[in-house]
Amino acid sequence: MTVRQLLDIATERLREEKIADASSDAAILLEYVTGVTKNDIYIHPDKNVSNEDVERLNGLLSLRINHKPVQYITGTAQFMGLEFAVDERVLIPRFDTEILVEEGMKLGLSGLKILDLCTGSGCILLSLLHYSHDCTGTGTDISRGALELARLNADRLGIDAMFLESDLFEGLTTDDKYDLIVSNPPYIRSDVIPTLMEEVKDHEPMIALDGSADGLMFYRRIISEAPAFLHNEGVLMVEIGYDQGEDVSRLFEEAGYEDVSVIRDLGGLDRVVKGMRHV
Image 1 (tube, one colour):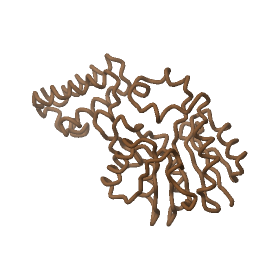
Image 2 (tube, rainbow, N blue to C red):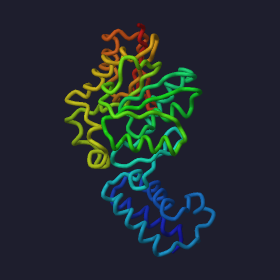
Image 3 (cartoon, rainbow, N blue to C red):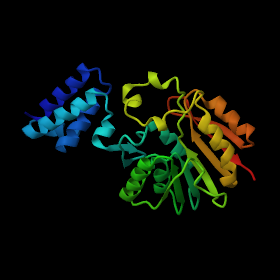
Image 4 (cartoon, rainbow, N blue to C red):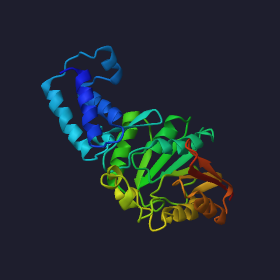
């Protein structure tokens, strides 16, 4: 069987099972198994594939048909032009979250001290450090498994960062002051979770999804506790759900933050709230 034939068969199999992004998922899995990229297929469509690779790909397609995300199958996800190790202990980094990193980069990111709450795979903190100059960073997470992956990603990327097992700020002291605090906390309302795609509700860690009855529990804690850990004119930035801009920005304002703003993603949806704290 040729790689072109195998890609066509894999794509059709996923389409028949109503898997979103069937073509791209099939190409990713084919490359993962054989090392042959989609561009390679256009150049050498008649390259033969071993029976072992066909069988292995069929096994991975079965996982995808059962709605296991392709990133968990391959163990990697792309974010901010970097590759991160992921598995079911952490959320899969999403393109929307790059807005949070890009807003952080607008601060200049030279010599800043950064804290990332609910760090998960470490993708936010490590991306900020990768694209910064002389910045230092700490990531906290309540999940020991997530922290293991974050440390692995730091090692793979050659980035020096500290990761601490902590429920938000609990593992820190108020002697620790930061110039920038970022977070993509759990923010989905509890009653919405059963309606999510199977890829999300059945595979991604619930602890990283459930934001309580109104989805705002973690924002209340972060916004109220962050001032004790921010330098004067330090900035807090959080990712939000598309319908949470008004509620979260109000929490910022009620807590005394200044220059509060809501940043939209490329789809025009509210995605990040940020504010500055004057001490």
